[in-house]
Length: 459
Image (cartoon, rainbow, N blue to C red; front, side):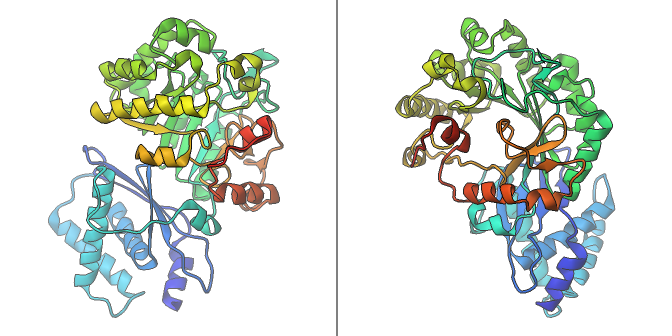
């Protein structure tokens, strides 16, 4: 135990990160997040694969993986020969035996092979040959030192009292919110925040807004963030052929485009502008550039022909889709938005038909709104049950650098300033802890819906 704890203090100063097979179809982005240090307590480390799959690994495997990653990273880029790999493994096993002196090279090699093959199987959406165990975020919350994802709201919704987004969505969660209008940070200030996110052990960044593609330095910021798993949330209007290529060159990991409907009139009505064709062209440009693309659709009574939308997207070559109920804040609390809100039963029937379609057409779908559909019904559809991750799995940073529980949480006081306050002060602040404790209950409740509707949907 003493050797292990000394190793933690010496080697686990931050996230352990590497990329396997970076230029091949089986690319695996690995971020291993060590747990909070405790003298007389062992907790698993968290491994995040490609910004998607989260799995726990025990202390011994975490140490072995750490040394292997350090060895591989020291090699640099290029094709690795068998001889070089053997030399790296000799060094890895030598360093691991300083912690576990009685363990043989044969056992370490066997364990390492199991780790590598398991990661590869999971990254390929295959069932791993071994049972790696499951630990929920609720169980892991006490050991966390930061969320797994930070959403960077690099563009504001309003500037100098004027609407700054290139759409005016009926259900916009940011419209009229307390922190929807703030000054925007400079390129250098955002780079400082990105650096601080790395030091804080946050492995994923999402660039969002407002509309992030309105910033001229977006590609520069994404390129600067290559250490992270990066995602861009956009309406797709400005996703030109050139911008899509530039984002691919900047190593953006994924882009999510919001499309409300495959019917031009319906989409334009819901976004408050005539940009349907621009958004469709943005989707096509992203796919043509080779970007990993998903399409998101907030569902309401006006766009409930979701299967028709999926048929349209399938013809375009889209494989990954997400859908949701409405985030009941901002414009979504208006009478016009409320009148188009679907019931839980209506949402379920739409989702059931959608899941049937995606399963039969080599597409993948996720539902992202906690509390809108009964967890038992989602389980019957073999879908992940969404839960609020505010101050737990995800947080957000306003355009002016202030931290909020999630990117929709714009009406309440902020949790701190990412440029001025220490991360420990923000993460361990009373308000952040309180929200995290609520999120860790995994009750299937959106706190914003509870605050704005005065009700909670229990599952």
